[in-house]
Amino acid sequence: MEPVTLTTDRLLLRAIGAQDADAVYAAAQDPDIGRWLSQLPSPYLPEHARHFTEQMVPQGWADGSVFFWVTKEHRGNGYVTEAALAVARWAFTRLAVDRLEWRAEVGNNASRAVAERVGFTLEGTLRSALDSRGVRRDCWVGSLLPSDLGLPPTAPYLPAPA
View 1: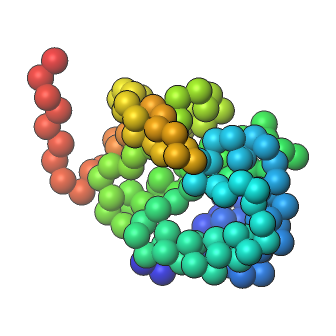
View 2: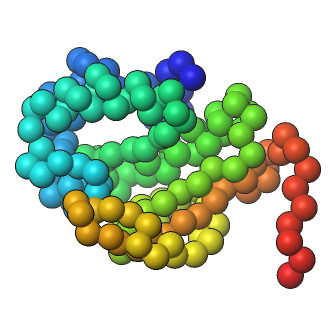
């Protein structure tokens, strides 16, 4: 999949590129980002930012992985919720995706709150599902379906009987 640019009322969402390595490096110095991003090297060095912007981001586009970091000065403004809704609508309407999955380490209440505001349904806790610097941790998992956003699915859905 090729990178796209999405816009919302307040945001321009574009793929991070090599020109953003310094900003990525600065953002990764925030202990709150490092705490919840289990794959983030510690200490986070400039070469990690270059690897992220030049290799990991293009690979994420290739395999359909999307994630957001929000720096401290931008938290609490609803930007991640707005961005996640835009990406979800794009995935459902342009890519014909019928299910999005969200995962976060148990305890990452900010991520969970965003997922719930977007409309994700919490499906449970996956035991030992995340590797956080060599330590196995539990994670929450949730899903979002097109119907959760009032959009039609691309295929019929038959939920399990209650």
